Length: 575
Image 1 (tube, rainbow, N blue to C red):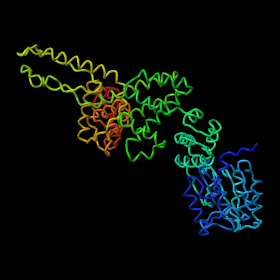
Image 2 (cartoon, one colour):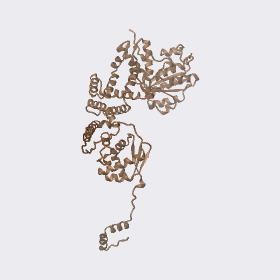
Image 3 (cartoon, rainbow, N blue to C red):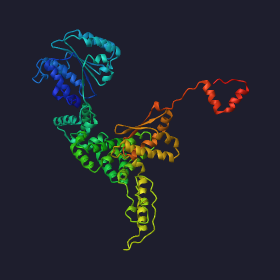
Image 4 (cartoon, rainbow, N blue to C red):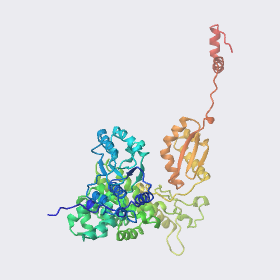
């Protein structure tokens, strides 16, 4: 029985041009070899599975190759290359610092550095997971790393650059490896499929690339697992079943149900997802990413951020046309809040279902919050008996309490149409129906983020004095009194500064912020508006310090009986 070799080893790059997704590192190393500008120490940093150790081996093999090709790649035919490929090279040493991290291990390595290479130009030391070395081992290695023999080269690799001593970093040429892009991982998987005569759907390879989270080694490990599961034909269904991934069709269906306000279908779909063995938070994470992808599709410049297969990208583009940016932004905000509070909820299923209920009504909430103010139908009715000031328009803001409508005397039209009273009754009924809908949407409207409108110091001042009037009406006259004398100053386009006199006033206003900020954000239609409070010590009332005679004089003037009392005791008051 032939021994199976995992793809991560079988397809490990043996030339620089086969390294995946690290073109910036490969090109720099090739130029260094070409121009003979090789540093004595290299440090390869980056996430796991992106090619750090592989690149270190390729660099070691290439600089010791006796017959470099025209493109400065190792020939794989000379004595040095064949010895390296057979893991029998006497000039290239690998040390795993995770298990050999003591001072003695490093001292043994330092002792070997003193001996010149045999049949090669350089003696090369590759230290993997170098951040695992102890502080004492680093110190023992420091002098050799700073002044090695001309034939010694050190290549260090690590996933945690921040754990390495600055004295080591300053002596190395540092290369930062990038995470492997999904497209690059898919291209590599396609090449392997061709070599192995495996048929694979592009959607399936995209899922594998995404699941690998930027690590090519993980992508190859997942690929081997899927091949073992499905054989020589890899389908999208097999991949999501094996990797426990929720099918994106569920998210497309859920979005369509929520946009149409079909709450029953949304809850049934969520129940189906739970019955298939998926966690509710798993659904939240996937649905949040789905909404994010729809938002990305709204603008041509952000389409490149959509990392899915081409046919899936078309589905996202089509569905994004039916979603407004306001709906997507508020849905994403609601899902994020639901996910944040998920662990704190005692009934987690109900917690997610409540979010779906809100999303079902989100469209109507946005419509109510963005509609034009309603014009009082009384302006359309020519009732000459009412004075002009009584015929002023009634504005029904979202979630506002209905205003009382004065009912004039019923006057029948000459042509037999509805009387004025009947038409006003219809208007009142419509208003009641609207207010009932607004009451249902009250919680959802709080989530709506409208397009922010700019405001000026003048417009803010008008609302400021309106707010002060409300304070006086609600019994907060003390608060209103010092706010009237507090100067206002606009800072930038979205911040106002209120100047106070004392720390007491500042503390009172910090308590008032809970009502103050929402009031101005709503009335000025700017959700980014902020108000800061500063204390101007120059405006604080100055307390004059009185001498003791002055204090006594003041007390006597205030209470003449005190003077009589002092004189009755035969005392003298020295003013």
